[in-house]
Image (cartoon, rainbow, N blue to C red; front, side, top):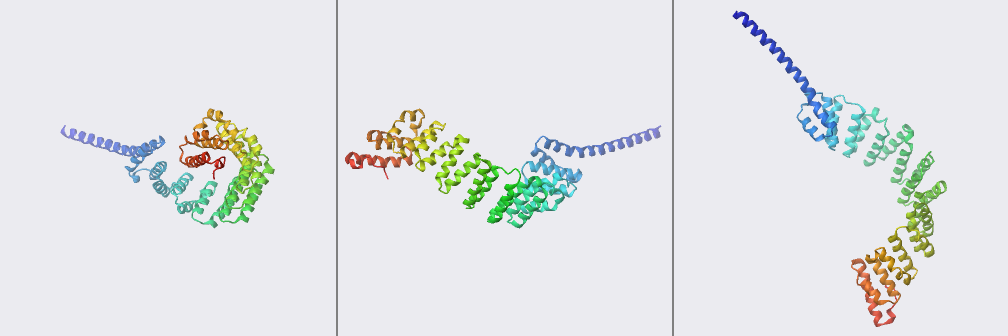
Length: 390
């Protein structure tokens, strides 16, 4: 009986041990799955910091190592820790994660660290992946520029032009700007002609190229290109405004006024610019006509006062006092000074003094003191009266 009990006990013990051992093995397997499942869910819910803390506690050799480093790299990338994300993605790569997503994250992690050498190194290393997407070429061009490798820049652009027919315009623009940076203007203009002959060249393309030429001192070529665009596209706002600004900057104010006026017919916001340029060249009737078109009351009034003062119509400015108050410009010290000046030039000295004494702004105050001194001298000696201050 004892023997049977002993055998039964041993049998039960062995059976229990087997079950226990099996349970531990299953638990270990479940634990392995669960270890990466939780950080994976946290990443999915965008709790990247919590996922990182859990992943730090896991031994990567006891889980799916490739997946571990992929998850860790992704969480770090999302936390903008690009140095460590690059390191973890590279480890995932070493364990067999060589798909396009991993390559993209490795390249982008180095790119966002501004580590151009490693960025270019990985793009070149994984040509099978990177040569199929034009965005990698854009990144490579930028990095090579930062490394001052302009031979590499131009050869990369030429390679991209052969590969990506749909993105030719992008790469021709890059080539144009590269030549401009190198001050190879003849080559730049050759590329510009090709670029602008491409189907779908827009007014924006003409304006961008013209601006680049202008910024590099090629004023005549810049304006010539804009004039060509004007004949192609007609009254396009961007072209009209670019022409107006270009002419203004080189002192051709009549041309500038003409194109600002044309632009104002397309966009009323340019009435003010057109009126201002006409004022500067003494075409006051044109200036007043265009000023009358301005919708913004206070801005319209400010400019009108300036035009009337240039025309020496001081009494007309004084006649605007009520409108000035309605538009609440009577609180502006520049306007106060303008009224004071007009009052002085009209012989209304007390009125001029009243306005001048209200001025508080430091810059305007200096002018007001000078005018007050002239008024004081005027009261003593009339030959000082009605003289514009110098």
